[in-house]
Image 1 (cartoon, rainbow, N blue to C red):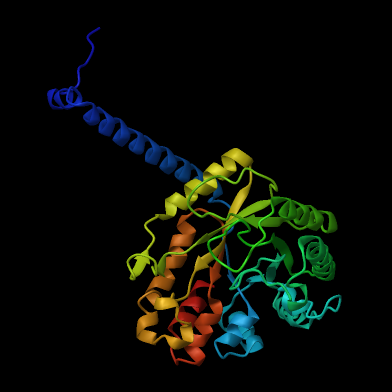
Image 2: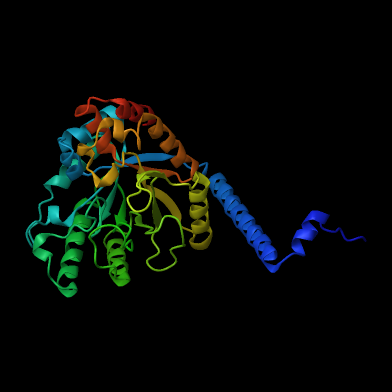
Length: 352
């Protein structure tokens, strides 16, 4: 049987200098890698498509108040006006244990009460590192203590939180810490894996019924194979941000939705665990490190507006992951109440 030869132009290219061969092999490897990732993504999207899609929001009272809003009115608007029925709530250590051994759960109680009244579901963030700056929310009385002093106090606090809310009809899952190993963002200094393992095991022992989620600390590379292996993994997706380091311009992350589907698919193949989008950017990213309240509406629209809002949720669905929590719901209400722009809340009404 005759052996087919390479086309003459390809054969001539291959016989040239060694670097031609190197470039050819490199391009071939890139094509094979991209093709493999795309194939895994399509497999994952197909296998997950029959599951119901859940769209929720992160809600943080302190952030609402920083925007000049009433936190309870903000949550009411998200429930009653926007129609939100999935919430990701936080349990900041410094807020709920302001004095050592003295708990004040009133802030989290009213959030659970509102969710329960609306038959909404909650994923509850636990631990030292939780969403929003400075990420690690250590109470002032624990600052300066060594690890052997504050870590047992943190576990005692986490136990109190779990025991208080584990029987709520609205509780659906926990998130243990938040992007625990991410060192490039936030005011966190302790990244001890054993602490994360111990906290996760404690939560599962206290409440074996509800799933516990651990978020990836890198949203582009790697597979989290180390312990703990949670019930589910979380991933955050930010699309348009201000690049303060190099270009000093708005930066649109180039990863397509199928790339995140491939990460979830590889995770499913290797560990058997599902993945959710625990943060999908749905608020403006001001330039030069400004606060939202210092940024004009025209400037805010450069990174997030009603059209981007709709497209962003479509992007989240296109990842194939069936549970997506939008980041910045308090901001939608701020635009309506403070800036007189209801466009984002109007989109939210349609989406939910």
